[in-house]
Length: 577
Ligand SMILES: O=P(O)(O)OC[C@H]1O[C@H](OP(=O)(O)OP(=O)(O)O)[C@H](O)[C@@H]1O
Image (cartoon, rainbow, N blue to C red; front, side, top):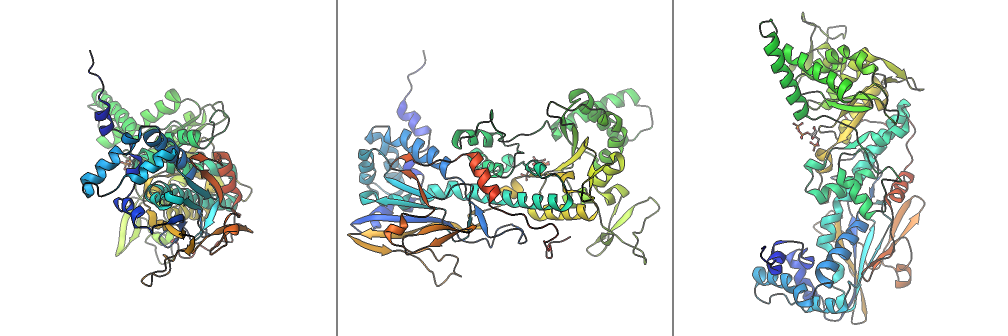
């Protein structure tokens, strides 16, 4: 017979402890606030973009706001409900007390305030916010926290948990939207279909994010701007917390795709068989590996996936052989593939190493050693020489000089957009997902346009190199107290450090955020009557979500928030060509 479950042991091992989700110093603050504190208001604000990895030509100083609704439901309602309010009081405070006692000293932190909350039975907190999917200017708070009476301390106690969970989804959603802007601009510039932009940024980031929860919430940030994703739980999260329904709408999707384990295993297996069969023939290992890779890709595009989309990672051994020899040898098979039920039929080649700009777009003449007439010098083997930092660089093949898009064009040809840019035949395409940044993105798209290719010849995999190489300082998110009432006296709180450049100067007093034309504008030092107006609307009050939004609404808000600049109007000076 199984031993009975010891719930105390289980409790010790598992689960988040609601009031422990804070910095230690937060636990001392309720007692440090003045006696008679009767109201406390705090705001959470993106304060700076000076460290943001955005393109100055496209970034308009606005941050995409995302995260509050899921956070409120998951933490404030579900977690605090299940593990604080719905358990007996003694048990609800026990783990908090144990942690305080063992870390800060016996009875260093009183549990009286938690017990009073437990007696009340809900979190007496009001959260007012802008709708998620809105874009908010730097220095304008998209959310404020209000707490009153003996529980006023709650307004700032939640800082750690809120900031920890929310700075990043907004940060990633903002960067994803900057990719969307970039791809939209180049679609207009080159006449590529704009509905394809939703598939042109594909979320590759999950494996490199800081845990599952981070991946799915940031993955939702990506989904506000794109439908292409490999982060499965981001779609679950959209359904669980943002009213999305995959049966009724397109939340996110992907296509069948190989990875290196598949390619290398199959290639090396075929290679071993080839060696057994043709062991006496005079082929180098490299030549036989190329033959083996061709056979594997043939199987993939004709037998495993004779129709629809299939993405093939193509750099396991020799990408340039794959994109020139294999792509040419299998041309008839690839052109004969059938469309799937959605009418799609494409073999997508995926380079995954090297410099993405050069791999996709090749080398320009000014990046090669040239003769006096400005023509690239070709050696006896037909190779070109790149310009290195100190004179001659690498010797490269004609294929490398052209880049993958042009190599495929030479084999498959294609069509043209109404703006005269070339689009690869619909049976082939390219996706690149290794170390793609906004800056590399603009370089790739510009160079393709310069060569006469439309933007929709490539899809970008956006990975953790971009979505996880950010910090709270990327947009300077912070929560600050701005107003208090103590014993009937109103105090407008603010900070303005003389030792700072102004970034840390906070709003002061009661705030109101109003929509003025296309911007949200902050007005601080407002009267209580004005404080209750404007665009910061109550979304949570006394334990309940009182206003909700959906993925579809967020996507719509975001899409409506930006006008694409006129094609050709952007000056890319400052970004390497
Ligand atoms: O921006 P990132 O988080 O790097 O995500 C994208 C990369 O992740 C995968 O490779 P992986 O790193 O697993 O293996 P690899 O380095 O050997 O290609 C994928 O092939 C991309 O290259």
